[in-house]
Length: 303
Image (cartoon, rainbow, N blue to C red; front, side, top):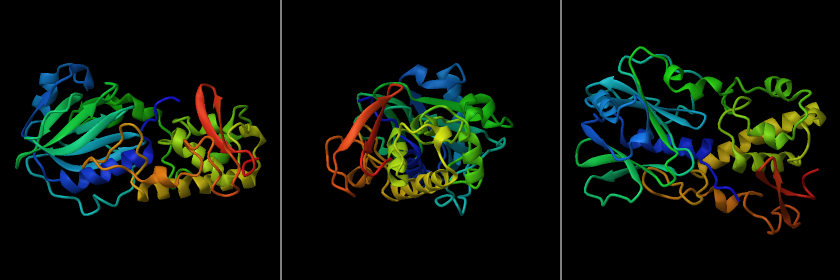
């Protein structure tokens, strides 16, 4: 099985944790231990120089990306910092942004500076009072960006411009979803993984939403009836809310900023449960490959 990648609930869990511990904190310095982790600017020295002296005003999430909105000097904590679920588009900031993508194995950990350095530590930010924000990434696919003042994030973090609407936002409506699926001759599982259609969903929650809606992952988009599309739309939101409440799914590397596991894996309906009994009918959970990606489902409950 391919290694799971943090999806919307995992990244949202990290965002919420960061907003609890890093707001109003000034970046006093740092250290880049693996230069290729920094995607922009080209120089790790310039990256740290631009961030030093700026404070973290608020963390945002777009799809699987994290962005720390920055301010000069000490910042005022936003009243809605812990509760705002997502954003559609961020405009230019007076002090820029720090952008992060965890990719496959990235972790952002809030730790004392005195903690032993992990083997796979890639970037460190020193935020005062002996604390630091440490980026640990075993596979080294994670990336960071500094977005300069006066520039929209998607200009530097070009992947943002290719994302579809957030699945928990008003923009992701049933009519929008139906229009995007209409006449598509591809399996619905593949469609749900298309970040241009809807941002933030991956293997885990695509499997879970398809189970809750009673649809097999191999069903072609063009074959879906309006009622089925509406059911799937509701199931996507249902499973994402449940997963965020459970603080995501812990697989090989995902942890929140305090290093704590997510709990959704223990209540998953089908994901990573091949050969186990269905929680609804008792039938055996199946697994197959669709275009190189795993799909878990119940032959009885999903038709």
